[in-house]
Image 1: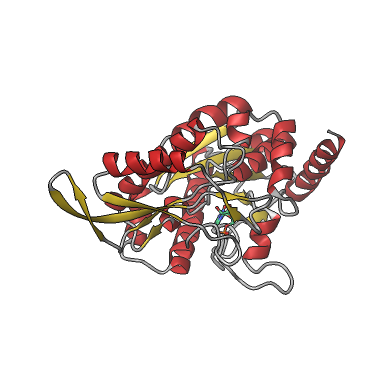
Image 2: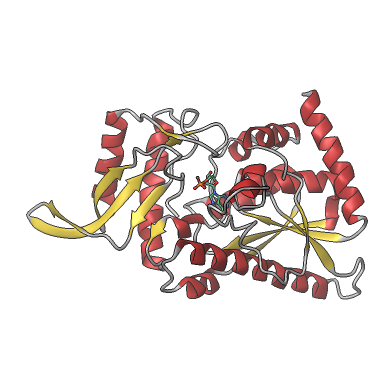
Amino acid sequence: DWTDQSIIEDQVARIRAQVGDKKLICGLSGGVDSAVAAALVHRAVGDQLTCVFVDHGLLREGERKQVEEDFVASTGVRLVTVDAVDTFLGELDGVTDPEAKRKIIGREFIRSFEQTAADLVAESREGAGGDIEFLVQGTLYPDVVESGGGAGTANIKSHHNVGGLPEDLQFQLVEPLRELFKDEVRAIGRALGLPEIIVGRQPFPGPGLGIRIVGAVSAERLAILRRADAIAREELTKAGLDDEIWQCPVVLLADVRSVGVQGDGRTYGHPIVLRPVSSEDAMTADWTRVPFDVLAQISNRITNEVDEVNRVVLDVTSKPPGTIEWE
Ligand code: XMP
């Protein structure tokens, strides 16, 4: 509608004024925010933009494919995929503190972008347009507030793209969504022609599954969580709950074990937590009253299909006092 169009026009003008004829890169996370930020910048400056998708190994099932196929098909942007699984998992090895994990992931994102920018500049050897000086980020207003960027607010979590940035950052930031809330961002994404599969997606944090493993992150633990998450998402969608649920983090309590029994055997496995929440803007949230039979189906499937998990629990905490993500 008129408001969306005027926000788009206003941002397009501001982006052009900020970057001139310089080149930019934009990190895509697979989420709504970075996709809309990229589409907006692409509208403003076209092929001055290259998008970068960092596969850090903390992605959910199918996410890489969605970016590489659906996003590129709908926007026509130039995309570079960086395989950084070993680097991220190496840096995260043994780290259990949530803020430490967030800072490492934020820092490694930036390193991947810097490396990609350097490679791109080297590729176009004649250097037309020179260095890449700008980094586009899909930072929203709530990210700014909750990372302590707003006046008089406490630092609750270092969002990977706000509080987690290194001090010697060699890019200037372009953040066209910094004053907007999620529903506004979705509306703008639709007005820019992005498909529903991208704008209708549930929010997923940039640090990915790395902050949904309580305990140290490892490839084995990620594989467990990825399977449990895919089952929960599939069943919630099948039950028609995608509109009612804002998002449903699935969390692996990797350092907790409990005794179970399967067949004739004793098991000593990990619990999975389901955290379905309903919300308007993620600043506050309530736990979603998912029907018991849907919960039962998810629990049965996860405990049957994911060997290392022998217990599924439901988080019934609103925000506040709980945050949506566990870390
Ligand atoms: P919390 O856990 O603070 O989450 O209640 C609020 C919303 O923000 C998402 N979230 C993030 N999104 N980078 C992001 O892009 C991050 O570092 C990050 N941390 C949390 C979370 O999924 C929820 O939608």
